[in-house]
Image: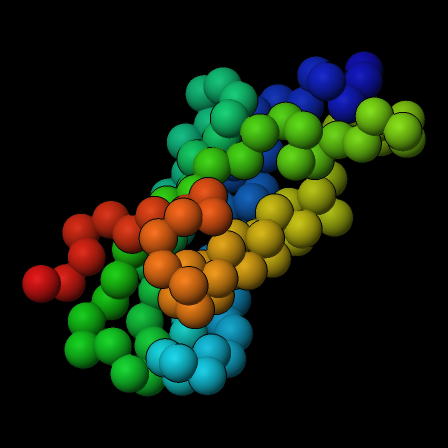
Length: 118
């Protein structure tokens, strides 16, 4: 089995599990904590949607990002043969980094807000 055969369903599920409950400090919004995660992994790219709360937000906010197979493979290194916890942890960290970038600079960068507060 090569890296190119990573199961998207497994990748989405494991990434959602790795993201659920994570927290990060943000100078703009205070402590942000992921409270709910949904994953769609029927095929690549996988889509991760997560709801987060923060000290300075009056309501929970929901964000969505996608990851391509290339986000977990490196053509210069042989594939591990299976999507592992290290891959899931990396994608979860990437999702939070994209969120922080969005909060600092505005829309763009591979993440979007869903049902933004009015």
